[in-house]
Image 1 (cartoon, rainbow, N blue to C red):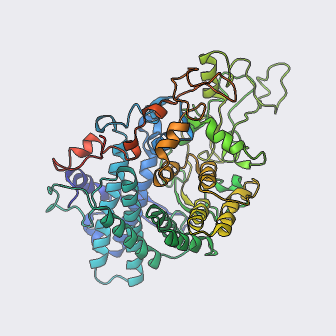
Image 2 (tube, one colour):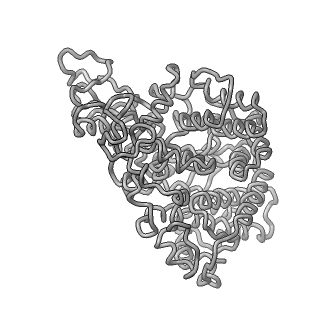
Image 3 (cartoon, one colour):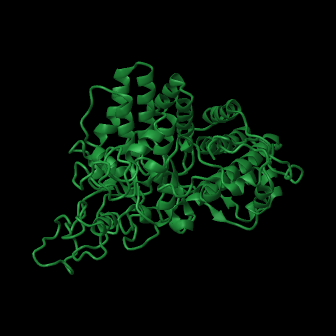
Length: 550
């Protein structure tokens, strides 16, 4: 099975944008160059190393895409149980108006193409590195290990999203470019490749690196623990997650405000994409999608770093997640560290008479439980709780786009992996200890018992808006039911139309009216697998299997 024309044509232009890596800096440095050729890349150690660095660039480019208001990377968050897809391009997918058929799933092509491109380039690098003569063996192993990690990561991502995928370890060449993909790859073969690649990466990557942004042994072990959970291999998930936890190389940040601070390079971060201004990457608009527009049309308020900068609340927190975070009054995560729900009057130049600086903004009309739909909508735009994880410490608060490194994997999730594995193995004491590591770091009270629901709740609090929730719900068999119960805003399980009292709502905190909760009644059981977009199906064999239900 070979990748088809679109990937080959794309591959031919790869090395006009290839990148050098340097070892004199403490971050992964990428400099565009027109000096590379495919021959140089595949036949010299320096070229192979540059090819590996290009894989990081392709991973980051997924987040730099400005299409659809820069929202493509967080479409997966819009389709979970924790968010309100209020408006903008992302809401068409979050409310499941799009992403429900092969014909209306164009954004999903971004996920499909990105990961297959990475796989194809990783295949080429691995094959060349295995065959090149005269390369130092340690250097060769490093190149292959990083490329295999990327191949495993992208293969796993595609499998989790689309299920019916094809895999190959052969790079696209002029000789095989016209080969037709006739069928999906068996699941057992997919898992074997992923696990073999990660085993090689674990055996050949160091625990530490002098270049921020590079993957390490801890990154590979974290991913292998995740793979094991999907296969219900609890012993392997425990082994790999606890190896990271007990490595002495990683530790939870002491306070949630430090996790995403600076260059997102705390000891907790297992892998972060680098967007260093004027060195690596372009700006992204993730923060703009996730933060409300609290300072617009509200005298006495201005955008600040502390309050998360400017956004337009295209995708914000729903009341289900907000209530989970507020369940413990001491939980710091919703008090302006990861998330923010209280915005303050902070502009003396426009402060209305009778209002004190530093007090919480309370608009006279725009309220969560206002009597009119219009005023409730303005509250969701301006004053609903937002996510601050993607706003840089040195960002310009009034700008839509920002430079901000993006955490891909971090230790808090590794602890939750360990908690789940230990719970399933009957090691309740260990599972409780793992869970409490995450809870108490945020000043939430320690627990003395543990259930799978408690782990799911903690995962929601800790990892919301990081692209992890949808996968966990699918893996645990909860995606369909949790979206039916909680997607958008409203009472749990209320399937009535927006602003309707048919489900028992009466516009009170206990029984809020539904808002942007279309996904609850639009989702179908088969939607736990995304449809393969029509554009991608057209490049496959005529009998290639679309996912069931589409």
